[in-house]
Amino acid sequence: MSVLADLQSAFAPGRVIAPEHIPVGHRSDWGVALASDEQPAALVYAQDADDVSRALAICTHHACPVVTQGGLTGLTGAATPSHGCVIVSLERMRAIEEIDKAAATMTVQAGVALERVQQAASEAGLFFPLDLGARGSCQIGGNIATNAGGNRVLRYGMARDLVLGLEVVLADGSVVTSLNKMQKNNAGYDIKHLFIGSEGTLGIITRAVLRLFPATTSESTALCAVSDYDALLAFLAHAKARLGPTLSAFEVMWPDFYRLALEAHDMRPPLDDNHSAYVLLDTLGTDAEADQTRFEETIASALSEGLITDAVLAQSLNDSERLWRLRGLAGEFSRVFSPRIDFDISVPIGDIGVFLERAYAALTMQWPAARILSWGHIADSNVHLSVSIDEQPQPLEAVERVIYGLVREYGGSISAEHGIGLLKKPFLDYSRSPAEIALMQRMKHALDPAGLLNPGKVL
Picture (cartoon, one colour):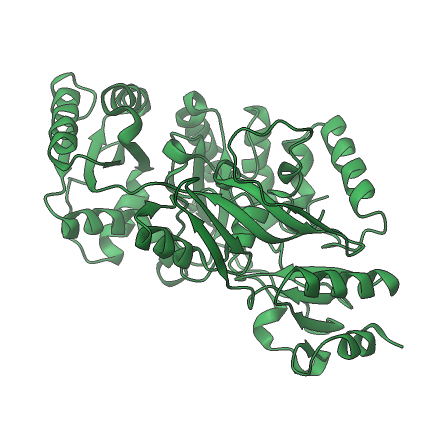
């Protein structure tokens, strides 16, 4: 029997979809599609770990590759199916199984949307801090499998820091359940870290225990202008020292990004558009009056010490949302800045200013009409660039070699938060040594000796 026939006999009607009936949305993630002349072998809608186990056991028997899909919001092709693969979709695994207030944890299936996790935590009087622009459609399993970052890494860390336990199905169908709720657990290897950030190449995450935090009751937001990158670094140090653990975001926009955001949103400039860079500062706290006073004093002292040249403070939730809307321009690039080549990179914080100067110079030397936008989280070393070249098609590989070559020179990462997938695989050795890559390959072979899980991705 074929893999399709075996799957159909093992699952109820409607749970296994034949190739000709697979919805078109499953042929790609957010930006990378399967070639039009290629076809998956089947699509399986799993509802729990047993379903995933059964599907993987059948695929292993047939030596058929498997690609896991969640919300399909990834940006590097990690969830793009391969020809002849079985797609295992987790979108029906939407159960929030438990919220343990004493342990401050939430146990969920992998297909729960991030926004639903946030809402459930809030309804319980708690807070789940991971936050991305795709919160309404991305799924927590995918967030964990890609070690998602977002806007609050400065305070709460990456997805890796928000996971206590996992349930994972291995390539042969074995189910490894380690739904630990404890922050301290040194009983042997902490195996969850093998799978967080592995992009579905080592196992399929089916359930997770998430860390929750006390609900915040106050938020303060300001947009500040700085004279140069050295001043920006001094302001970051000042904000960390004065605001302590309430500092939740330190987002930076360079002038071209800021001007386009104003234009795209038809907004009156909160600050003049002639500054060297703009910092969107945000705090989350539990004492509204004290938090706001401390925030205002921090901004005032930064002005008096010359660390910033101008500032505007949000006076209401609407003001805060308006300022954050500027930073959210990147989610609208398809409307206002296309065609383009996007970069999600990390460079040591102290080098980002010089790195960007060199990147701009190198790009405009080779393509004088290039348009370059830069912005990022910065306080966690993450900077984003979008480059538009006056050529069709865009010279993707040539531009990538310029940027990733500089990233390698500064000891940075070609992927800060988006993963490797298909798109960044050719440049993995720009950020990982031969010994590191060899170790990754050994881990892959140990857990997936036939190479069936998400083949062709990452390594």
